[in-house]
Amino acid sequence: MRSIVKGIGVGVRAPHEAPYPRPAYAWYVLGVLTLVYVFSFVDRQILNLLVGPIRRDLRITDTQMSLLSGFGFAVFYAFFGLPLGRIADSRSRRGLIAGGFALWSLFSVGCGLAGRFWHLLLMRMGIGVGEATLSPSAYSLITDYFPPHRRGTAQGIYGMGIYFGSGAALILGGLATGWASGRPDWFLPVVGHIRSWQMVFFLVGTPGLLLALLMFTVAEPVRRGLHTGDASVPLRDVFAFLKRNRSTFFCHNCGFALLYFSAYGSAAWIPTFFIRHHHWSAAQIGQAYGAIYATFGALGVASGGWAADRLLKRGYADACMRVAMLVSWLWIPTGVAWLLVPDPRLALVLLAPTVFLVAAPLGVGPAAIMQITPPRMRSQTGAIYLFVANLIGLGVGPTAVALLTDYVFRDDGRVGSSLLIVSLAAHVLAGLLFWGGLKPYVRSEERMYDRIPAGSAIAAAGR
Image 1 (tube, rainbow, N blue to C red):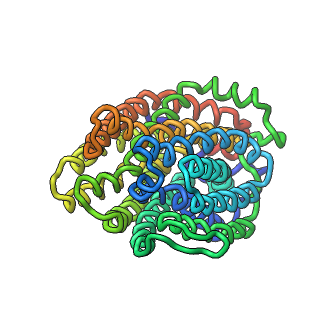
Image 2 (cartoon, rainbow, N blue to C red):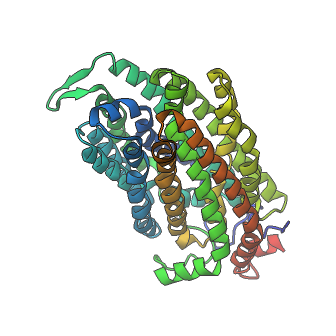
Image 3 (cartoon, rainbow, N blue to C red):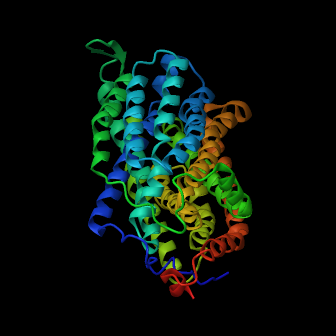
């Protein structure tokens, strides 16, 4: 399965291409994008710590709650990502991200005004639309700022935003929930009286309205790569490219969608599991799980990108897929054990490697797509990847856990059994899909780099 990588691991460029931006500035841009990603996950995941008070005040079920944290958000996030990804392939990516950041922050504040289930659902849909601007544009920007042999690491660092953001949501959300819960009602000028959980949304949403301006310190880089071509690629060309590489995209997108299915399904219900099964408070589990999630998740996603770059330099064209396959199965022992041990502290200890391993492949997912995609299609193929991953992972994962709890076990206390079934099945199937996609991925990579003009520096480096 080893294939010599034709230039992508060497860091050279064709003679006609502009040089890459200064490394210091590229890392600064990556830092800004990662910070924005952190805030997107704070706004997205804060809901998971507020299940109890929201269910109580809005009088809803676990399944309805899962629609707020998963499906209601994910459908709009996934569907709007497709046209926004197409826009990002021809328009200002930094402007798109800045506008989206301000929009989802505004809708997050709007969650604090919700008094009924459908009010909150509409706000969550709006957050999904705003956040759909971010990752397709960010994947493309990172590809234009970093040479190929550093992209796995760069995408991995960007992916750390998932864990820093979710961890911050849990830690700060736990602190804010404990602080705000000290008073059953709050009074804000103009707004009037609100509940403690509504106050939390005001606290996490407001900073983004100002921080969106930070994106204007990011320069729009030269779009680089093979046959950059016109400013816009016809959709028929995008679909033709996907059809030629259908085996690769099927195994890749569905495999990562299953990992997201497990990751989001677990993240949505782990705090509730500790509250119901181990009788911890929201503040306790928020701070403990948040620290584990932020630390070990960030280490995991960065390590996965680093490992893929190391394999790529050694000549493995399928490095990203290979890392994802191995880690999918390595997750299983601790991923099962933490749900079965009776001691909550031991469960937290076992959660540390579990979070590390579930995070490790998530940064290499977009890097794998960028490696085999022409420049003017990168945001669009990135958006398609996110469409599949988030519709299945975020849209169905939390709801699958809730449906098992509500309609199969019919017992709120069995949420741990639901988590076990959903996560274990997802990781086994994901590993099989990645294994089946190794050879197709190498063929896709070879087709991509066989298009290089014979006399170019990249061609010379690879042959």
